[in-house]
Image (tube, rainbow, N blue to C red; front, side):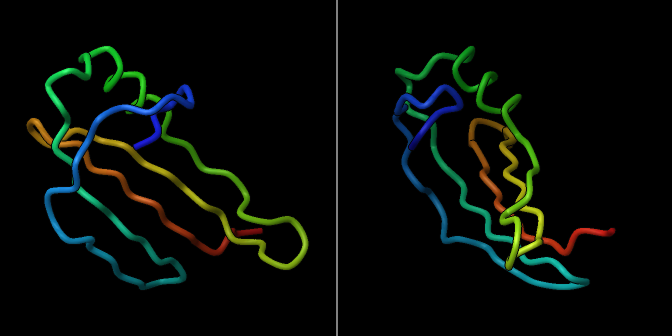
Amino acid sequence: MPTGDGSSGSATPVAADTEGCGSGSCYRSRTYDVAPDVSADDVAQLVRSSDCRPNGWVIDRRERCTDYRLSGDKLVVTVSLADRIS
């Protein structure tokens, strides 16, 4: 799994993806067990790297958001695409 600084950390998916759509957006989430050799600082840096940006400029004008959050000792990664309000 890539970390916020572009390096790879150790994480294993622990549950099936969840996904859904509604009100002009779609998302997919995956939950990971974080390996014991990954430091709390590395996980915190990844969580702080959540962001939103345009998915495309000309044809695809949706906004893509990537969210990292901790849920107990699990890392939840969610990617969503949503219509941008102009």
